[in-house]
Image 1 (cartoon, rainbow, N blue to C red):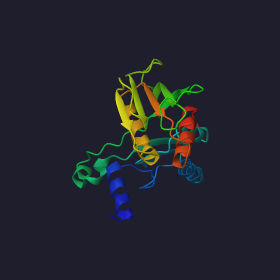
Image 2: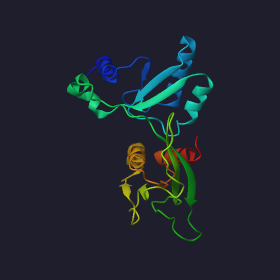
Image 3: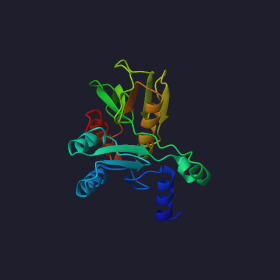
Image 4: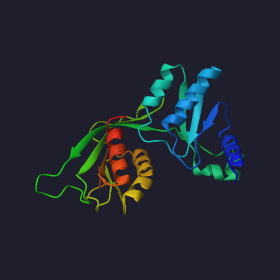
Length: 220
């Protein structure tokens, strides 16, 4: 399907004006959103919906607050797989879900001197993301408390610990990077309270992953 026809199909399914559609094969980034904000200011637009298959980790809520401070209300939404079903589009059955974002508190468990690191794989322990509340733009918290909601989840390179409500064991850092965004969204939808993220080895894409996890935990 050519890109122009693909975008037309999404717009037909969404049935709304003032919509920006993110890249087809990449996450929506801060740069993309900043360009949308600039365009809105030039054209005196105060409300816009941004549709995307993926969104850069750590993008929300900061960029929404920045846009709101400039008088622009942004509503980010996921493009569902049903958009490829022309019959569902024609029957107006495609639902675009709001993007949720998560407030977290980092809990880093590092290895002790002379002992292997917790989590293995050459990494120095794991980063536990405690979900202090799951929020949606314009909504507020879903009501989860700081005790962690529905159990905990695990993602990493080592065998997951017992008792995890959801797990994602990856074969290498490349697979970790590929699966991480989707795994976080699945945990969010299921109300998982804590996500234990094993820190990958600090080589290649593993170093970028470590930095991304730390920045997400810091709300950056």
